[in-house]
Amino acid sequence: MKIVRDESGQTIVLFAVFMGLCAIGFLAIALDAGLLFREKWMAQAAADAVAVAAAEEVVLGQSTTEENTVAAAVAKINGFDNSLATNPATVVVQSVSWNGATYQQATVSEPIPTYFLAAMIHGQSTVTVGATSIAGGTGSATCVCLTGTSGQDLLMSNGSSLTAPSCGVVDNSSSSNALSVQGGATLSALTLGTVSNDWDNTSNITNGGTITSSTKIIQGISSACNPTMPTPPSYSTCLADPGSSGGNPIDGPSSPGGTICYNGLTLGANGGQGTLNPGIYVINGGYLTFDYGVNNVSNLGGNGVFFYLMGNSSLVIQNGANVNLTAGGAKEASGATAPSNGAYDGILIYQQSGSTGSISAQGGSKTFMNGSILAPSAAVTIGNGSGSTVEGSFVAKTLNMSGGGTLTANTSTNEGSLAVGAAKLVQ
Image (cartoon, rainbow, N blue to C red; front, side):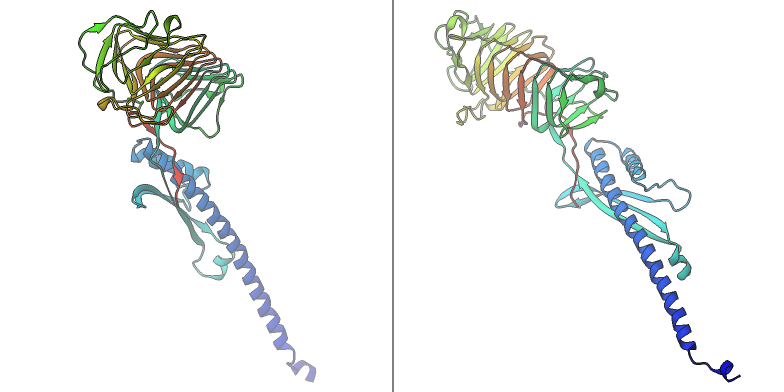
C-alpha cells in the first residue's frame, strides 16, 4: 500500500506530457507557417503578373472592364481564382500615382485554410495571404507604320534585316498573313503590334526567318497607326528635269528653306555627280532618281532637304548609288546640323496621300537618310544588298525587303503614330 500511495515521479510524467504537447504545437506552427510562406511567395508572383498585364491593357487603350477581365484571368493562371465558391481569391486593380506618373497597382489575396492552427486556436481556420505590385509603361513609339489594311504589308526574305532598337513596328493589316519573315531575314524591334488577331507566326516565320525574342509581339491592337501628315508645300511653276543629262550639281532653291518644283529630278546620270542645295523640292508626277554616278561610286544627295512627291511621283535609288540625305534641322553624316526647313524640319520625304508611286532602293545601293519618310500609300522595296539607315519614322503601305537589304529606323518628333505598350514592374 505504501508503494501505491507513493506519488514520487508523477511530476516527470506530467512534464513529459506537457513537453510533448508543446512539441506538437511547435510542429503545427512550423507546418502551417511553411504553407503560408509558400502561399505568400505565390501571391507575390501572381500580383507581379497581374500588374504587368493590367498596365499593358491600359497602354493599349483597353477599357476598365477588359483590364479587370485580363487581371482575373492572369491571377487564375497563377493559382488565385476569384470565381471559386469556397475561399475565393480577391483581385483588385487600380490606378495609382507613383513618381509623378500613373501606374497600375495590383493586389492579390486569398484565405488559406490552416490545419494545426485551426485545432489549437478557436476560429482560426483560415489566414488571408496577399501581395501588391505596381507596373506601368508609357509605350514604345511607333517608328515603322505599315498602313495597308489587308493582305501582306511586310515581306522580308533572303537575309534582309529590319531593326528598330528603341521603338515599335505596327502593321495595320487584319489578314492572317499580315507579315512574313523568311529565308534568314531578321526583324528586331522594341515592340511589334498587329491589327490582325489571327496572324499566324508559325506559318509566316519560316526557313530561318527570325523575330528576336526581345521583340514584344502584341496581336489584335485596338487602334491602327495613323500618322499625322504635314500640310503640303505651296509652289509655282514646275521646271523640266535639269539633271537628266548629268553634269554639274543641281542648284535647286536659291536660299535655304526656299521651294522649287521639278516635273522630275535626276542626280548622277551619265556619270555625273550631284549635290542638292538646302530647301524644299516638289516633284510633280515624275521620278526622283539617284543614279549610280561615276564608276559605280557616287556621293549624291543634300543636307537640309525636303522632298514632296506629288501625284504618281516615284523615288528610285539605283543599283550602286551612294546617297546621303539629311532633313532640315537634323544631324548630317558628318555630325553637323543641316539648315532648317521650318515646318518640314525632321521630314525628308513626304509622298502625297493617295499617290500610287513606288519607293525603291535597288541592289548594291548605300543610303543614309536622317529624317522621316512619310509615304502612307506607297509600296516600298529595299532590294538585294542595299543598306538604308533611316534616322526617323518610316511610313508606307507595304514594305518588301530582300537579299541582304537592311533598314534601321528610329523615332523622331514627326512620327505621329500609335504607341504600343511594353509594361514593366516598378515596385
